[in-house]
Amino acid sequence: MTAKLHVSSHPLVREKLTRLRDERTPPTAFRDLVDQIATLVLYEATADLALADAEIRTPLAPYEGARLKEAVGLVPVLRAGIGMVEAALDLLPEAQVWHIGLFRDERTLRPIEYYNKLPSEATAQVCLVLDPMLATGGSATATVDVLKKWGAKRVKYVGIIAAPEGVATLSKAHPDVPIHVAALDDHLNEKGYIVPGLGDAGDRQFGTG
Ligand code: PRP
Ligand code: URA
Image: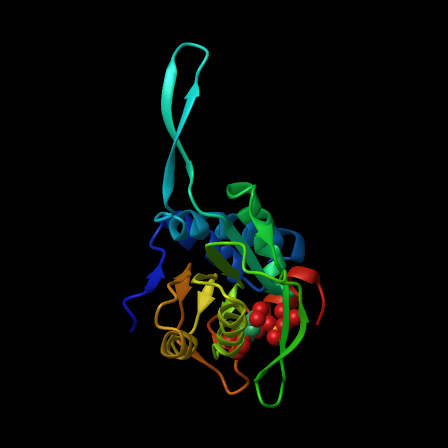
């Protein structure tokens, strides 16, 4: 498995993930858990962001502090990635959000792009792709393809559950892209669903399906 794969070992992540996976968890609680798990995985995924010195004054004294040096772009993959945006913006309030719309063709499992809201120029030094599920890896690979063609230099994938197949596909196509997830599951079933997984992340967040 790739050296760029980071699977959280935080006990809170494991506990929240158990509730997220539970088939009895309704959409309201599911969305809340996606938000909380995304916060924890993003905290780990942003640990190497560069800082620039920033001098300020507290009410008592001068203080040599720090601000983020590089602009960060958030790239949620519709639909399921939407649920991770709020958490990312809470941590990175100045980030821009660029939506990419992809869905998997149910028969071929290949991603079909239907929406792209990237600005004309790559204006962020770091792009965080947000999508809870890395299954075959087709959607994540297609998203990173689009970002790199557009001019993105540094891309990270931030998700919740990955299958080994998806990790292998994404890291083969884009070995420079670190993968940060809450869990690495066992395998994909014949319909391309992650097992044990959580089912369809979009349907469970939005009460469809
Ligand atoms: C899900 C998920 C990923 C994709 C992962 O989206 O959010 O984007 O599947 O599968 P892959 O790794 O095999 O490409 P889906 O196609 O179900 O669309 P939706 O979020 O609109 O329901
Ligand atoms: N997309 C999902 O939402 N769930 C899976 O298990 C695989 C792809």
